[in-house]
Length: 247
Ligand code: MN
Image (cartoon, rainbow, N blue to C red; front, side, top):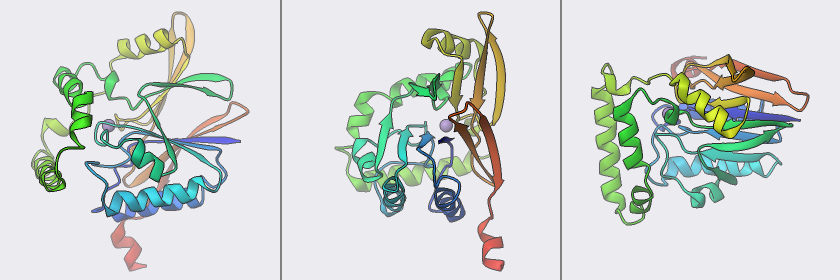
């Protein structure tokens, strides 16, 4: 029995090799998994259902019908999808944070942006943008307006490529300790920072572990956990579009 965790795929219709790599991942690595957790920033940007996000939902749905439970958590780039989209994907929407029982080990799952308290400007933005009001607003904003917002965001992120606004801060260690203590767990799994690693910690004289999932780009990352307690953080190469068409 295996449970898989991924995050930060940043799926984007403009980077089809990532979607192809993800579909291949489902058809190979994830084939016999009992559960697949996708911990945020699955999409580079999710503002509304469109042919691209629906194609991904359709693939997930067919995958779930083979017997794997799928869980989706919002990230900071794709927090607007709701249960309606999850239903189309055959997935369950998870709150951030969520506490699960991972083969007997209580485990805290998060996207990870809420751990980066040193970025005060971002945390202020997060409180506003992640409010219920903004979430509800999506149902009254016309599609044409959303499309214009999407174009704006894409232009801005191009302009800010070298700038600070795209820089992702690392987690604040005291907030990691705070979350582990308040949920009384010794294991935390999150993404967001694009710094894949397994960190051994000591909280209140007790060993604890923080596993950070990696983002998908030239490489893909997943965490594989087995019922016997073994855990592996794995990376694999992703073939870019240009090389794929050459061969
Ligand atoms: Mn993120």
